[in-house]
Length: 266
Image 1: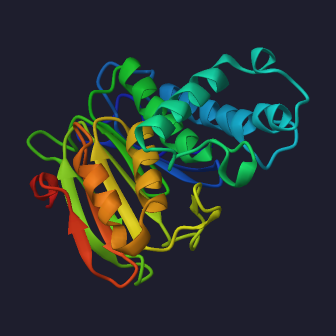
Image 2 (image 1 turned 120 degrees about the vertical axis):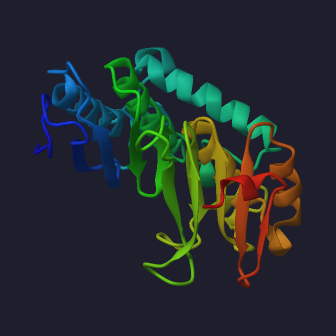
């Protein structure tokens, strides 16, 4: 692993790293914080932890706890305790969304819709615990930001346009926030409506902004799943979420947003 930047660097220098893990690229933007021989060391610890998450939670690895639990080879008590934590949060998101979020899409145990956001959120928290007050962790466009990018400067996060590869639909800005987007931009219509068993196609993308990424990511996935007929139900549900705002692009290219989303538009 190669990290750009080093502890003891000049003010303003940053540690940057991109890691291929969990089926995506997780990138870090971390100031080389003062007094810290732990700067690059902490980042290395976080990267190793993300690989542990991949090995434990991947539904594509036969030896992961998720795969073994899914086929009945082990009990939940025999798995890493974090798996019980994740499944409990998935159940809570499922109840809140009327069943549109599930850890068993298509009938197979796969909590990936929660795990990626949870892992990135936890990675950012690990950096905070190591002494960094301002940093950003980005996993395939789902972002957890701590503090700001610089004094008086917010973090700016681009939201991909699902109809124009490589282009942005808009940019949002903020401090101490999370931004999660679900939709068809990278993987096509892969989110299943659990009530029909078919891919949800009414919404091309939904972005949810909130304080922490795990829930924002789960809520974005649920909103896409309930997005039939342009997502009127998804819009009403997103509006009801305390502390969260949403922006959506429908399958026909029109857009909608919740009442407080404009405060984040850069």
